[in-house]
Image 1: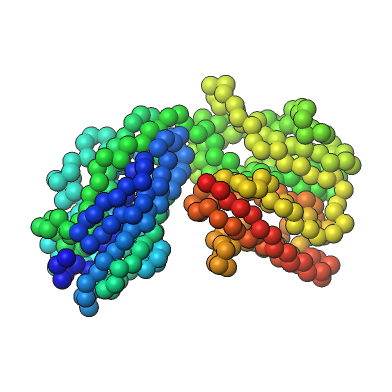
Image 2: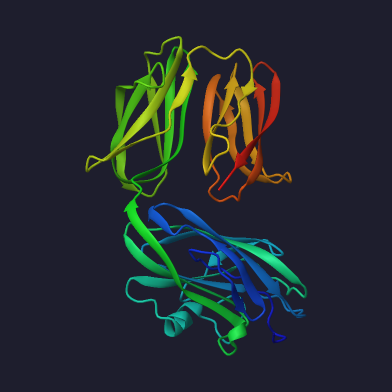
Length: 377
C-alpha cells in the first residue's frame, strides 16, 4: 500500500454477503434487502477492514453512489475506528482537500463509469478530516436512502476513495457496479405514529405520516372487543407529499370500558391498508406504569405502552446493551391516560435493548422504570 494512502471507509451494497479486497481495504460483510417498495426508506450496513500506513496529514473520505434519478440519499455515516457522518458534495464543488489530483469527483466517476440516462452518481465526503490508521481496524458504514416511485430492477453502483488520491493505482479506490435490487409497488402512506388518549369525556386520536402517495384519506374505526370494528369518522388525506403530516380525530362518544381503534388508509384507486390497533381505557389510570413492549421479540417495529394518572412531563428513551442512547421516542408533556408509542428499529442491529420511562407528574410524583426488549432480524 502506498505511503500517501490515508484512510478509506468503504460503502457498498449487495444482495448477499460479499468479500472484496481493494488494496488495504476489505469489505467483510454487506447487508441490505434484495427487494423493496417504492418510497420505502431502508438502510444498508457494511463492515469494513481498514489497514493504514503512517501519514501525519489529515484526509477526507470520498463516497460515490450510483442510484436511479428519483432516489434520495437521506444520510451516510460510519462508526467504529472512525465516527463521523458524510455531507453531499455537489458536482460543481471541489472536495475539501485542495491540491489533490481529482477535485470534481462526480464528473470523474461519470467519465469512468457512465451512469446512463436513468441513473446518476451522487458523491459524499466525510464532514471532518481524519488522521490515518496505522493498525488494522474495522468500520461500520451505514447509508439510509429512499427509493422513488419508479419500479423495476436496478444495478446500484458504489465507489470509495480518499480525496488526496486519484485513479492511478487500483489500490487507491474501490468500485462495485453490479448490485441488483428490485423496486416493486409504492408504499402509499408511511405511518410513523398512532396514539389514543383519554381527555375529559373524549378519546383523542393522533397520528402522523412521514410521506404520502395518492392518499385519499382515513376511515376511523372503533371496537369494544378488538375484533369487530365499526366506522365512526373520516379524515381527508394529503394526496401525495414528502412532508410530515399530522392528524387529529376526537371520539366524543367514549364509553367507560376499554376501547380499541384503528385507521383504514385509502388510496385514490380504491386500495386500502389497516393500521395497527391501539387501545385506551376510558377511565384514567390510577398509577404510573410501563408495560412490556408488544410484540416481543420484534422486527422491526414494536409498541411501547405507559400509563399516567395525571398530566406529566415524560421522557421515553431507548438504549443499547452497553448503555448508549439510540433514540428518544418522547420528550414533552403528556395528558393523563394510556399512551402507545411506536418504536422502529430498522436502522439497528439485532440484540437486547432497554427502554426507560421517566415521568414527573403535575402532582409532584416522579416515576422511573426500565424494561428490556429483543430485536431479532
